[in-house]
Image (cartoon, rainbow, N blue to C red):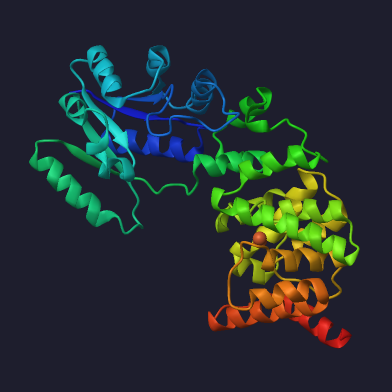
Length: 394
Ligand code: FE
Ligand code: FE
């Protein structure tokens, strides 16, 4: 019997992880055809992020992405139906089209484990088997195996498709697009399509925006749980700039941008450095999570057109360094003691910040080094340099 796969999703945007999963399914399940069906409007995230491409554009990107794969067909079935895209309706429609084929509905592990929560799962199972992408390296195998046994006991056919997922989500993709370093994660032709159609703000000029325009853009790029901290850091930095006679505008901009790449996880930090042609020292390679200060400074410079003072304040906001500028000190300290921070000693730091900025900086550095030491982690050589400099000074 002919076997046809169904692979749905938002594909906003389609990336190489999707394409790789599709190809693996074709091979592992011996599919004669794989239908990739972009959702018109997905049920589980009713609203797509702002500035998302249209459904038609997501479909066209998929067609570009799959152009070299004869077994893959990109279907506009859910687009033609409009409204919220439910899998049971899609499966039923495909079944009408291919009544004699075995249909395999493909999904990720999370969706499989919560399959009963979908709308009309029994309707889906009337018409299709299930194909589950799983990773080899995750602790999720026992849960998948258990679920598979349960489903099989009910007469459902479940196929497992090993997929060594390329570790990137569409949310991360959209950030990388904005930071101009998504190229290596996009199937051939998709980046050109994105640029030509000015999708994901790739053609927008974000240099030197006034604060009221900068703020919503920054908020859109952060993890939601970091927004308060970043706004608190900005406001604290402005207060400290006024206290110590630094440029308040620079302080505000460095404050709001200081964690701009914090939502990019470790390995992708390295991608960003690569894309910007930045060679890394050994410490940074060992601790890629600390790279957000460096990559944030590069994004501030290249994407947001910030001046040197702002750029360096962001670059050294986690480590400090010898010979720090006033703005570097202010951002370091503001980041440490803005109103959302809460740890033993924070009040002392807050007082010192407005009475003796060097003492506040020193206290912050010492606390960081102690904390790293307790955790058995290495400190950046720049922090040791900063402390030695402060001790010599004062
Ligand atoms: Fe930070
Ligand atoms: Fe921060």
